[in-house]
Amino acid sequence: MTAAEAVPPARTATAASAPASVGSAPGAAPPRSPLVARAAAELLGTALLVAVVVGSGIQATELTRDVGLQLLANSMATVFGLGILILLFGPVSGAHFNPVVTLGEWWTARRGGAGGTLREVAVYLSAQIVGAVAGAILADAMFAEPLVKWSTHDRSSGHLLLGEVVATAGLILLIFGLARTDRTRYAPAAVASYIGAAYWFTSSTSFANPAVTIGRAFTDTFAGIAPGSVLGFIGMQLIGAVVGLALVALVFMPGRAAE
Image (cartoon, rainbow, N blue to C red; front, side, top):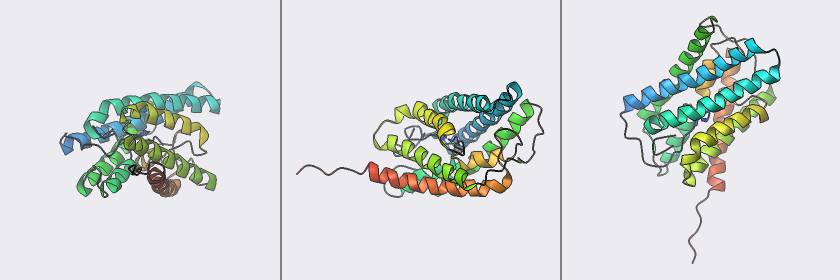
């Protein structure tokens, strides 16, 4: 979701991102931080993002039985948390916090843009997944929940899968569109705002992030997702990323010089 689901230093969701990272603004100069520092930033940032999502969900269910208020509290915490995390870690790693953002940046770099190598992509993805799982466990620990308990929240319905395609495509369109138009300075607010809105206008509540999806399978709480639903969500997120990149290429097509 946060995304993310959801921003490289100069490339600066995830995250959406945000994104929510989740947020990134690929296409500018590559980061200068050592890879180990960037990996640490991705791991810590993704962990804190998932801790925000899961923790605020647990807190909301303890404070009210109104599902609408629970979702409102969860989405607001995610918006604020994601925006802050992008601002904090963006100058180090780009604050991707999201494998589809990292993969999207690598793919666009193959056509002449700035981006990481396959080794860097592998390191980023590993850090994001480990961080997401650690963040879910941390949130459970803070609220005295079982540290690891597989979620029973089934999310395999077709309309939810469609929601993930829409949520992820919109996130990728936003992140790479900002990069194409040299407005990456707005990424923290823009990605966080998009993820907050997508909580409400998508049926899936906008996971839009494979790493976060995996992490949320480890907690049987408000924000959880049943392990059996994880592969379907990730598949739709990858499709959404492809759709988003295609829309970026169409909408932000380079103009022709005047004759």
